[in-house]
Length: 278
Image (cartoon, rainbow, N blue to C red; front, side, top):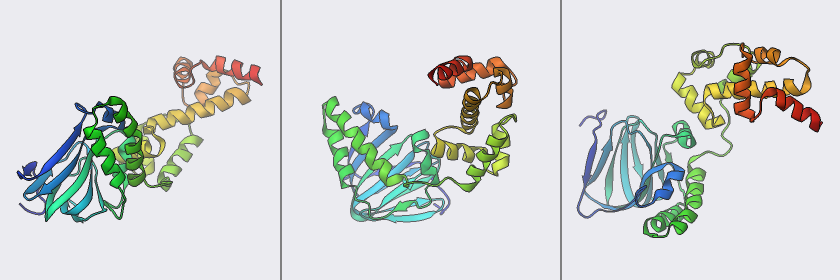
């Protein structure tokens, strides 16, 4: 096998012990978009490979040492280190010591985990995740749905705190893009125009918007349009058709329908309610 070749491989020796956590025995993990997880005590031989996996994978080393090979190179994972493998990136994992104790999590490629694509360092150092390990062991052992539900927030806190950077700054190109959009809401924006303006590929722009705004690029445009429309409804006497056109809707019915979906009431009612409150 060359350094650039990857295959779907499962070679797990008879002395490996794995405790799988899946949605069949633990349906509570669906709330975190966890597809599969496990606590593993490994001995040679152990080799697992995936080609373009659809989900994100986290490996945390408790004891011993393993090796992870990706298209970007090889990583040696030692105790206290967390390897983050984003979805659609092929990899191969193998044991590098007599024993290797790990916990691992497969996360669905959904909005709440999209920021994993943006993490620069694939290997995070000196992370105290023994608490996550104990919570996962309890999740596996518990027969009580009530007890398992109680563990989910704890597991979520661990996963979020170790994987997501605190106060992740907005990329300057993303800021510039939506500042420009906000100045020209009347334009017929679409994903192609947004991508070209920001000099991002459409998939990358989509991931950035989900990560920072929890909205797709076009949902962010709509969010800005609705924010401007609310401001104009409350601070001008402009006709609703004029406001609709000003924020990019040539059809007032389409605007009213979108506004009601966003705010729960039509624009005329929104103006009346807030005028009365004032």
